[in-house]
Image (cartoon, rainbow, N blue to C red; front, side):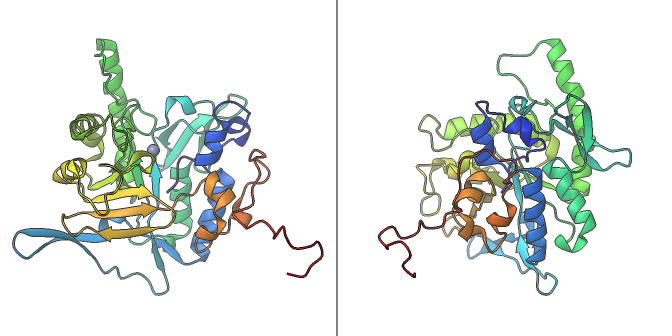
Length: 347
Ligand SMILES: [Zn+2]
């Protein structure tokens, strides 16, 4: 799992209030490119999460998610990439990130933004979506059947930099007209994304924390209705639900329990439920037709502290952007040297 990537570290890491969360949650363009190279060299191949399982009837009217057999090229290892929050939120503007997706003259996905001097930029390198697109174009054997990544979308500020969202306070005719024009503008982007192997997941409308006691199944339903209206109507149905902040519903154990929120979301058609964790795993639930997945997260936190958990994918020591990241210290999670051993003692 990735978030959006940092195009201009000098803006993201300029010492303001956002700096530490950008450092914790994201990677820079240089780190992302090194990660892709490493994944490719380690023989990973992108697969579409939707193709991993099929829902089948087992026994009497019982449905279950069952693993498919993917016939990958010899020696390749399947990998799913997901990108949370590619909505180009307003508070990211001017903070070193690109601002919206656009199409180039030749119809390819690119990103629009401003460089640190305020000049407009259209780029295929400075944003995670076109950068992955470009990498797969240059390395077609990094993708199985053209799969790219799952785009995990909220709705409260629209999608891909287009403000397709409604306002809970009601909307003036001018706001309605603006929203309608944003919807028209994003449609060709969505078409091109689908055409080129991207697919979508629901990340709730309001980026709500499902472990927060103030949300019950009704609140999750209201949030989802709004997501359908502002996002689902544009990108189409999805069976993938990605918990914001990785926070699981119904008291935090969706693996062993099946609570009201989970049942509601499953009844709405969701089958693949994604959290975040310290390892990558997936398990089919026995009591209800659904799959639970934990995702590893590529970001400053794990680069700085959990190198060993990611070594099968990439080496944080080689990826880490020493030049641009703030000086918060890092030990890559390696143990401190033994302090009780006298200096000079052979270990
Ligand atoms: Zn999120």
